[in-house]
Image 1 (cartoon, rainbow, N blue to C red):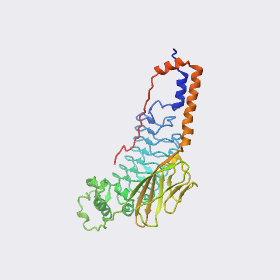
Image 2: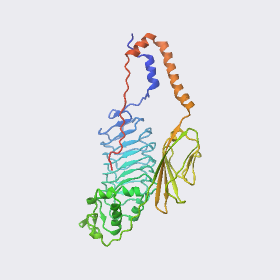
Image 3: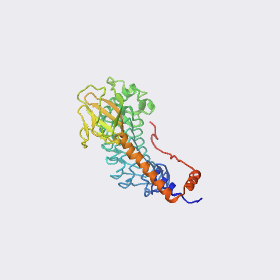
Image 4: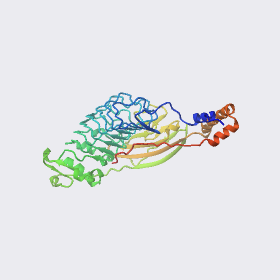
Length: 425
């Protein structure tokens, strides 16, 4: 009996295990697809960050600068945590080639402005955390192209104005949380605020600001309170305004409304949002049509699809001859592929009536049975055949049997850290 490594076992490992020459940086901890370099005293990013990373934690360091393309090669990255660093600005192209990023935490840094190029290309981004910085200015195009965005946190900054007009139903169909609390907002463009999608209004946090008391302001909050929005009801005492802009004359206007007795508030109009769900099963290569039937009856509708593989799809931006968006909102894919599987969301918008409705379709694209056999099973057979050949050349049958009996079979399951919903609404 020998004590050396059995060649057949070595070949089995090469066949069945994913091997990589990448190593974990010495200052980091790597567990499965999560890499943590938190509280490591870093002043710049470690060299050769593992490309297999899905979650990367660089928080509580001293990083003050990110070079363009610094995350190149990390195409699988979904969660990036960089809170409590010294970042003051971002260079153009900082996040190029990481378009799959879903959660980005840049809180507790030293940003003074948020420029429109900061997050270009991050169309899959769902959560953006920028609270507790020194931000005074947010450029109009900052959130443009972030069509998957669900939650944005700008609280605890020095913001005096915000481009509400840049957020619309068709640009941000999933945005449900916009936290602007504890800033320096005074007199807002309330018509732009009232024009926000209803989902955004429900999750718009404006408490602990320096709002000036007037009827336009009070009317907006009165309607939100009437509808029972948590963003208002949970923070009634923190909603204050200043009479004539005098910082010494503040009132809790949701509890002390005598100042607004002469204000006229409009009759509230509820705008319905209907979500229709369905499932579609299709074989690879087949033509697929997904309708956008909703509760809206108008013939003058605009349609936007969000797909798992193509991203944001409108009539104007289609550049693939295998995709077509019909006038009635139906999305046509002429030859489906496996990576077309996932959740498709169509948003129909009636701009004149200020109504929107959403349809969700869960698509599963299956490989043909023959292809499953040819690509998967035959690969396995070929690997096993090589194993047997190596066994015959290097290892006697009895020795192979002994090695099999004495070699423990172990399976290690890694821990996956997603880093989502760190700060619940």
